[in-house]
Length: 382
Ligand SMILES: [Zn+2]
Image 1: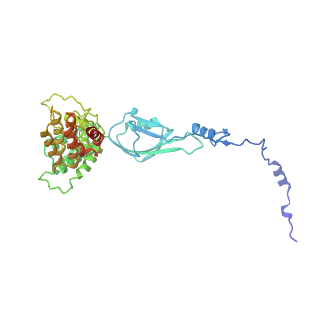
Image 2: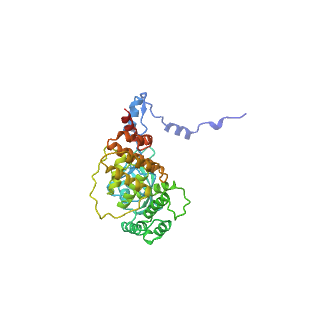
Image 3: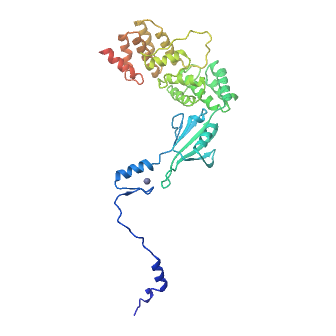
């Protein structure tokens, strides 16, 4: 017969059993919501949610450079002051400088590092771990510092003046500018932006001597690439060229910035808002010197706007002049639109509503001119 003797309790078992205690369950607990982060207890769900939201919210940490959050992979080309860098919702940061790290630093130390770095790759993670019992929230960024020395930028500009401003733009001259020893230092990227701009001019103008196979429309791509790089350089020349490029591409977002190149500043005002455009024209001084080349199409548009705004009254002869330019095969479609816009704006300003109708209908649907053209058209037809 099998026996069950082996489950018989020994005295040791009896001893252990007597030491185990189930905690006293106490009075029954009020039904409700217990906060998982602290000891608070709430009878209603909404109160509980309000509590968690108010006391235990972990916000996403972020950094602002000059008031804007940079993209996850940003290129920095101009130096930042300590006060231009703001770090929020951050307990600490983990940084990798030029591949070395990680190093744990405070938010202020990170700001210091960013303000003092000129040529480096910095990857970092901002960490918000204020809530001990929750997973920390982290945001990652990567900055490429390509901040050139001021003296290097000056040398690039010197080479630019010598090679591309005083002489003709050709593929050869652009090549010798890029291989000049003054453009090899930390200002190399600046030089490539200037070279892209000049190559854009060359492709847009298509001089007879250069046998170009690149399609005409590629000039916009080159202008765009130059704009992307040059807009970050805190140099008057870079600012002037970025304004010219924006104007050339019918982009008036940065209206209000003054370049000191009167014709351009005025034309931008005129095409942004024809009725309110006003800029006192400076006295013509004989000391103006060429600082950078402008493609002929854009140059013609600047001349047109200058000539028309100097007029006292409108006449069909001016209409004819504008019409010829606006339909000329030699211009790009962007320049056609600009010619219509200058025509419409100038005629409208001189009170010749009727003459403005023809160009207005051409640009009423074309952004950014549509912002005022469609309104004028409506006014004129009522
Ligand atoms: Zn709580």
